[in-house]
Image 1 (cartoon, rainbow, N blue to C red):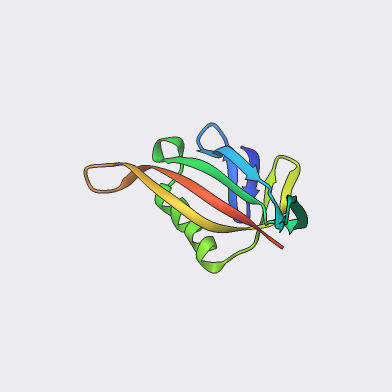
Image 2 (image 1 turned 30 degrees about the vertical axis):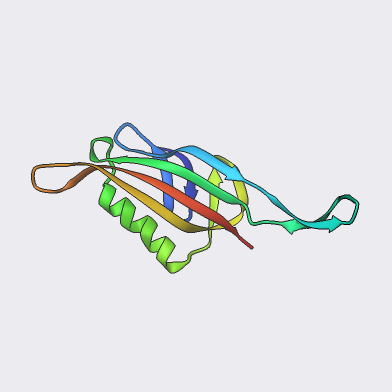
Length: 130
């Protein structure tokens, strides 16, 4: 099994029997400025500070790839509801300090004839936690 990385208790890995990883990882950093209008002159910008970084990624969860979509959805949702601050590690690198899950968009794609979830998609939104 090759471990790709982790977000807290969620481990991203690939093996001949299991494929649980992410795609479309995006980290956004912004800076806040105050805008001071001046009479008969251009506006003056003042550096106020950095806004918390945001991050998002998607996951494809399929029983056909050795992943239980319901268990994975419940695990991510438990971390979100608990407000758990987690490290995001990909390969040997840690990205940012700590992150909290601010939102999860669930996409239930395929069910079997008995209502069991076979394939799901997740879009996870994170915010840096200082």
